[in-house]
Image (cartoon, rainbow, N blue to C red; front, side, top):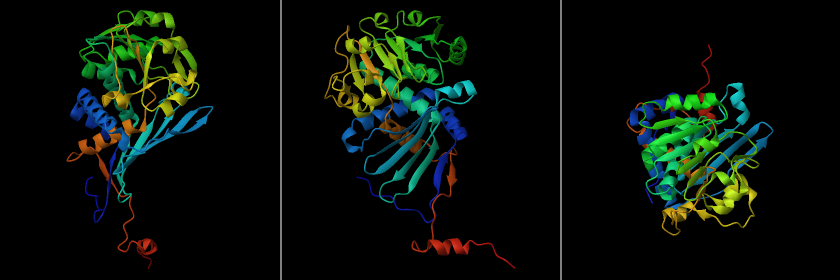
Length: 354
């Protein structure tokens, strides 16, 4: 255990804005930052038992969902506020926005406040590719990216950086989304093929990533589309009533999850029996369970996102901004000379009247 941190004489909390986050990404390099976050996620999954774990706390509405995702390793506490509103795209708004906070368990003082809209895209991509490094077929070079919205470019570049993917095949029901993704990937060292159907996109792909936004039970992939030996990175189904894969695909696959108690509510496996066997990723990373064991095996990462991944991303950013200009100190903490005299601090701040 580290020595508990003590509040400074005037404790200021570093705040990383959207602009700061963009500057930090360009300072470090997008692929380097995704790789760094992935390493921290892997390190935290390898000490899984140290964390408090709970399914995220949702507030559902007809318009979308707002969630809190908390966890603690006993030394630091972290949470993320995140929404998911698929209808926002049609209104010119982001489907997902987020912010997050780290705090010191010993004092309860916050130690970082940051945007997490961009950071969530980075950590989701980092998690996907990290899991792919354990589950994808050896030597996989081609990925189908089905759903070409806000997450797609990050996913493609993460699999390039971590898994060695060299070619991506893009498909979206909206051709403009595919054109956007293809244009954004120009100059990033990937061979990009734009496809007109999902069936075309998965031709020759050893990795299939699904990331669609509709908040409904959909069938993006049917059973006859999936051959032996592929790895499916299913990241679009992330709330009750929202799935992307035909049930029969799940029955043919070895299913890997972050936290079963959450995934059974929100993931693809919500359509299966509650006792259907799944494999927890932390056990694979610790060597307690097997990942890919054969060339014919279909592996499925039923990804819904979990608080420990956000915790890892937050602590990565906290470390990365040290000694940089990519944050603003915020005066968030009351600091009366006498901790018992909060009223006196307020009274002394009253404007002088003449």
